[in-house]
Image (cartoon, rainbow, N blue to C red; front, top):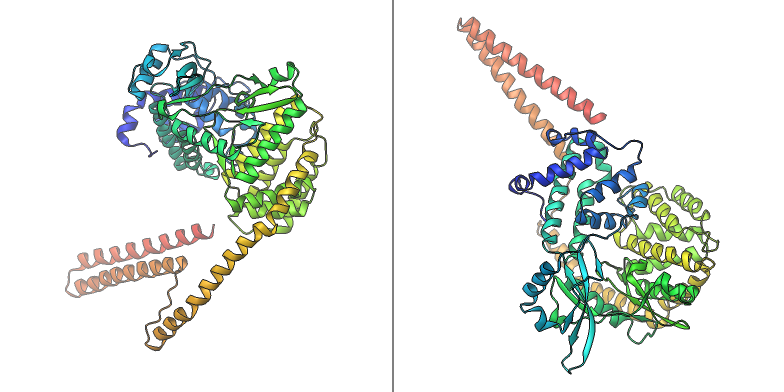
Length: 549
């Protein structure tokens, strides 16, 4: 999404005023008054003694559905958002009043190019659920073979895409104003934060992507009886309307009340999470209880995963590094934990490895080796990420999504099976993954690939060396270097030469005029030379002190 233009800002001025008024009401007026938007700041704060996190949550709630969805995405990014704010944002409830059915009907018919009764044999006008981006209705379709099939129809709220795009444009404007006016805010990179959230929320607005995700999940888990993903009916779906298989199941907590074993459910969820993250590298990034349905019999529960818009992806390289991290965690290998975390991150400055390793060891010892009821995996991951950032390591967003998925599963597991030992259950999974990674079947292709690269490099080297020697023989070989400090020095020398020429010319002109008996004109030229030279000296002194500070 492009940053806002002047015209779009003028068009959305009323919404901008509304956003600023809400920010002022919840205690952010002083910050805004320091920016170029200070003229729009009116009213006074009504925060009382509320903490920062609570004030952010209230702002998001007051600004409506698009900001609620944004707040939920923010709660998954501990690398960008302070822990106290994340804690509050997790309280957000994505429940909004449903859109009247006539508007939903119009949306469906516009997108599918047919009357609703031509597509669906039956359609329940009362929604099953209503959220910030869309709402879900139950319906029935007739398949090509004539058999009926119950489905759910997910319909995007009318104009929600335009609303979110407008709000994101204004957030870009606010972030830029804060960065320019408040230099200390740049440590949090407000514009980068908005860009990250913009990318995430844009993906959730395309229901076609969710359909692709469901198909890929179903393929990855094909043949496994303990998990199901809804079938997609693409013939009657679009980017704003998604028709999926209806799962007749129970919510997690209701299933436990009905006699399902909480430990069996937790163990099954753990196996799904580990396979999707560490074997497939493609996983549900928001597996909260509302997105999980329990089907089947109490003795053999089947997990149904729904709402597949937000997913995470791990490259094979990042997957291997994450496995190293998890293996080190379950084995309580603190040095291995520090090495794996360092490999996952990207250094933005020189890292003191000894101090970093000591920090990771101290953090890990607080959490590992306890029962699930006593362990806070979310706190461990949060502290490790904060520790890495403290030492200049930038952690990839995809790894943070892994942490979010595991944290969510941990929270559900604690509630339905408090005595379930997560780390004991995880050990065999990760040791098996480690064995598979170094098995002959996995290593042989990698060895052959490396040999192929070495062979190609060895074949190309003689020709490349010959070209270099030929250029050297004919005097065509050039070495180019780039030094930013050298460019600054050239600029300084150029300014001095220019000022010297100007001052010298003025002094020469002054002497010539005095000799020609034009005393006052010569004196004026002399004063101009004196002012130019003095001004240049003062400017050079000020810039030198500024550079040192």
